[in-house]
Image (cartoon, rainbow, N blue to C red; front, side, top):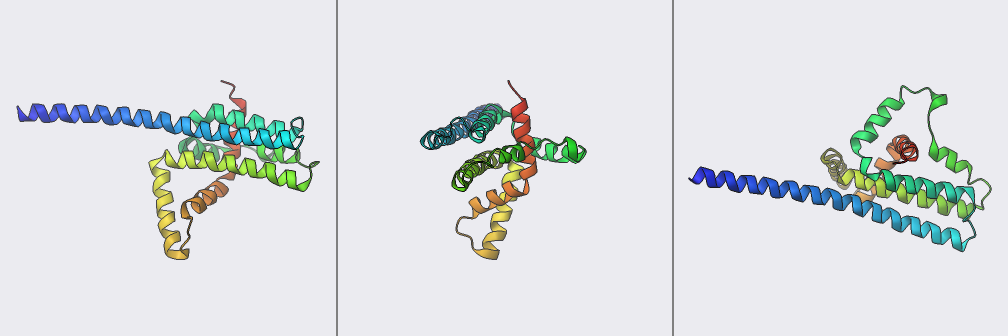
Length: 187
């Protein structure tokens, strides 16, 4: 009798854990989208205050943000790493570079507007990178190992932010690929 009760408790616990994981995954997706909506709203406010609503740089950045919001449920460590790996087999002339194309639209803006719009893009990258890291045990282990290394080496005060930024910079090409996929995916 005791084995049957233990099995029942184990089954109920496993089901509860699966439900919790499902709700947590949905929560994380809602959270990243909410963070992106907030960032997009701040971008809109900045563009409205500075008469940039019709400028191609603002419009393209907003298009990229909207695409990343729509595409968030498809973004993962696996997708990032696979995109980066497969990109090696694409000829240089055929590679998609949405970030580089967007940077060209900034050229006719004053320097302070360029820097502000670039900061919005960097913040978007940080939000998405944090989302991916928090959703992957593999990425989380790497971040924690890097955190321990940096704590021992340099005694950083904001280690997680530093690690995520470094990870974001090292995977910059992969994020361009994810942006390109998001822009192409109209579902």
